[in-house]
Amino acid sequence: MKIASAFALLNIAGLAAAITPAARFRLGCAILQDTIYCYGGGQYVAGASSFNHALSDHLMMPLTADFKVANAQSNWTNVPAPKNYITEPNYAFAMTAVSKTQYVIQGGAGYNDGKTMLKNKTVLYDAPSNTWQAIATAFNQTMGSSLNVDQNNNTYLFGGEWIYTYSDSDNFMTMNLGSLQWISTAPTNSITFLQDHASDIDAQGIIYYVGGKTSSTDFATMTSITTYNTVNNQWGSIPISGTVPSIRNLHTFTYMPKANKFVLFGGKQGLAENPKSITDICYTFDPVSKAYTAQNVPTLGSGSRYGHAAVYYMDMYLFIIFGADGSQPNLNSFAILDTTSWNWVDTYSASGNPTLISNGNGGSSGNGNSGNSGSSNDSSSGGIGSGAIAGIVIAVVAVGAIAGGAFFFIRRRNNQRQQKHHSQSSQNQFTMDPTPPNYFTSETQHFMMNYNGQNNSNRTPDPAFFPDGSSTTSAPTYTSASSPLVTSPSTLVGKPDISTIDEKSPSSFTPTKPHGMQ
Image 1 (cartoon, rainbow, N blue to C red):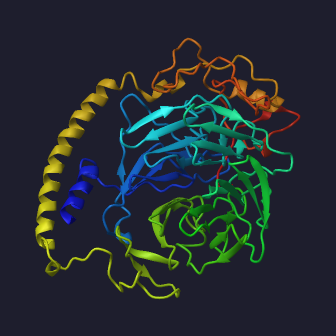
Image 2 (image 1 turned 30 degrees about the horizontal axis):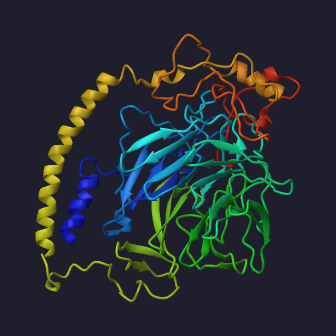
Image 3 (image 1 turned 90 degrees about the horizontal axis):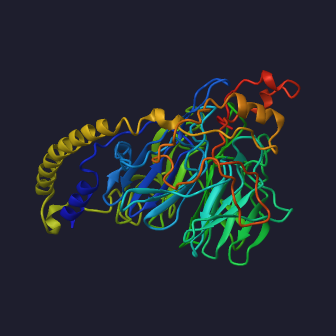
């Protein structure tokens, strides 16, 4: 069994060098086939007149073998993009696993350069085939929204902030994974839309929307939780009894199916470039009693973690991945929280018997195995000893290294041949609408016409950027009479800081940092 696991791991990652990823925040992660996949993220750039840097890399880390967490920060490998598809830089997007092998990304800040929109605003990734599918999306990009999927393969996109107008998104969209068509749904007037919030869906099909902001400057209350019942399509609000967590945004809210509870982790207060850490970093929420319970979990690093990704595995492990904290605006470390004891994990066990870091919650090891990880290295227990296994692994690694060298040499040669067709310069190969839609403000229309940097109607879009074949000039269509704020898929505009716009003199507008540590 040990040898099989070793060969399986080498088969997954042997042809790609293990790396320590670049630091980032507001990325997206999901677990597919016992492997964590993470996409994109942003890198903070100081200064109000600067744009944060968006990343386009795709990372994976298998969870089929034991590892010491402190030594596993470089266990990631890059997932190569298919040759007929170009992954786009993005962060602050909505992302969710929709099956055991696929996840969906929607919206986000995108290129974040003040002029370029995402070519593919909704994409579906399939892990077994390592392929991407773009899903036609007519409405504008939102950042800071949330995406959930129910047991009937319906996805639900909620809230966020329109990236072009800097205004709150009062939008609720649904899409069935069979039809792959977005439908606009009008919620009741009593619903307060959120941005930079967190959400998850329980076993009964109820989505819980927690915390965040109600505008770019106002925080949402934590004394109640907005809910949407996907079974009867009813909105609701749950008043919280007992302990109420402090207000926060850029936190995570993760469902634990076996316990039928949620984990609220991290977040921050403060706006723009002045984040404020919180001290009550971890709670469980019981949807039956409608109450939070504070968990005694030490902070990671300096201050509370925010802008991170959280994924739940094996009904016990909560992975807290990258993000930022009180002193570091970008992080590339991950930690694992054992939700059965509320201790941080020292040694991850694929069989569910981790070694823990004691924080006063009872012991330094999990499941009664003090000081030991789940898999024993005692050769007297039968089978091949650790020395023999090590020799086999080293031999396979050597063969893998040779094969990997040949693989990357061939791939590099092929990439050079294809570079003329898939050059990054082809990002400018699409057209602008001649006149912005009149439902935008005059300031926004002015920005769209004067700061797009993309007016070139004589060039043809690179199909690698438009695999869904959507037109760059046709008007959007909807299956609901209540359509959201929309624009042609070709409209490009950066996201200015609305506080810098001179309402009386639109020509004085200068693009500034569109979204940083808000």
